[in-house]
Length: 82
Image 1 (cartoon, rainbow, N blue to C red):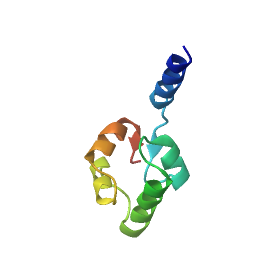
Image 2: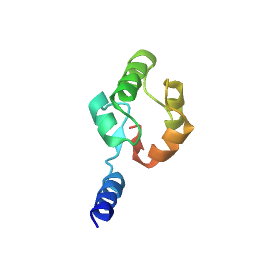
Image 3: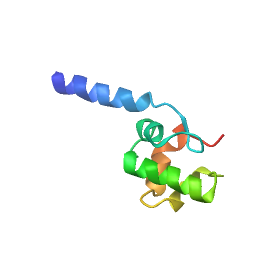
Image 4: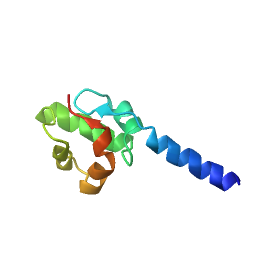
């Protein structure tokens, strides 16, 4: 029973993810909001954005080291650009 409750808690956390604007949010907010994006990847997103400018499409995230199409697909509904 405890395992079932734990699984329900994990899945409900992911279902309640907060959309995040990757062109404005800080690394902690990005990391907290997106699945499979830890603080290091989130910092890489912020660094890339600072050096190259705002992301124009969600797919532009593949230009950030360590972020592939699968990660984008998992998070697409929670990524905002404006």
